Image 1 (cartoon, rainbow, N blue to C red):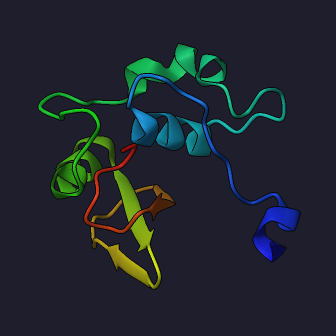
Image 2 (cartoon, rainbow, N blue to C red):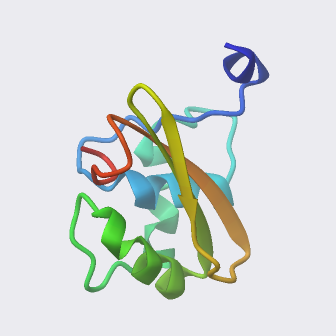
Length: 109
């Protein structure tokens, strides 16, 4: 609840299983108008190199996505307990991704 009140979370309402891509674009190009819509970031879609990435992206491909896009992604999964993981990839942008249902699931599943 405290995090929700701070308005620090953003849930992109996409239907294409590319949640991670939209989350990275939203972090790089903040907007106050319809920030939860992928259409707010369509113009930046070419910035993401997703060659060789399957969607929805499995956790095992996140390091590859990070290298290709100069981004660092931290993943938190939770069921009854929270678990976290992060990589050491150098990048200009860092994101925290929260997965309901545990970290063993892919992003957007």
